[in-house]
Length: 302
Image 1 (cartoon, helix red, strand yellow):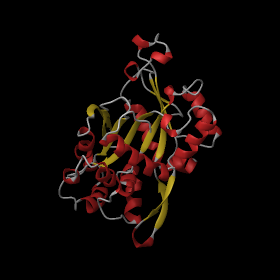
Image 2: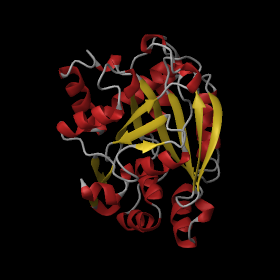
Image 3: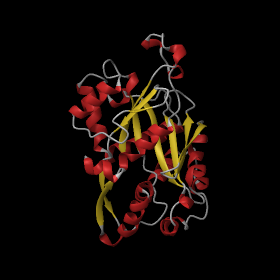
Image 4: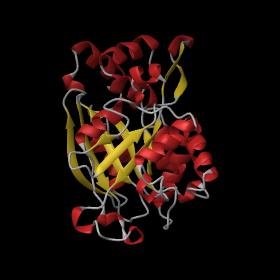
């Protein structure tokens, strides 16, 4: 990722991205093809619109814990989103400098799940009796980056994983993947013509064999038509469960966002357009479908 500053946050993000890219083969595949097509000369030229994380809404965890890492580094909490059917809440966070990506953090409302599934989740998370972020030195980027990869609860059993999967695919994803980076997002509107439009960029992705999330259509569009998003179907990972059981499950994926200029800035030349001139924030209906990039229905179709 491209940063013009060298801070604790940029170092944390670099560490996270390196681990994420190794787990998600599509990242390198897309980047290499973008270089071959002349869109960019390296990964560092790709502007990252936002990154996203998933959390469990249980005591000592969830958004109220996880957001502390970003608030301590200058991010500001912005709009709230609710996803009734998926039983999720979320906020997005605005970065302190323009070279940093937006952050999107979602949380599973565990208390809204069935008693059986709640019991499975709490079997793993009840051992966390204090907020683990409170014990972190948030100025130590290596310690913070390590925290994102550190198991907070015991390895789940395959039986428990599948029970969660049957009711909440989000819950199953988090119980195994924990705080792994869920996705990063290529800022399509910052690419050269014609790839600065999702139609052309998605065609390019299809040409190189990237499977796209079809839930709600390939392109998800906000009500004001100013935010358009697509996403790849999650790459699978070989998951190791207790008792030696293994299973290929959803890992992480890549998203693609096109933010149009706000009405009052439509006449600005493209080389004059900055982040503040374009549509900000997110859209509940778009994000609702993007979540499904890790869903079994999408993975099976790929």
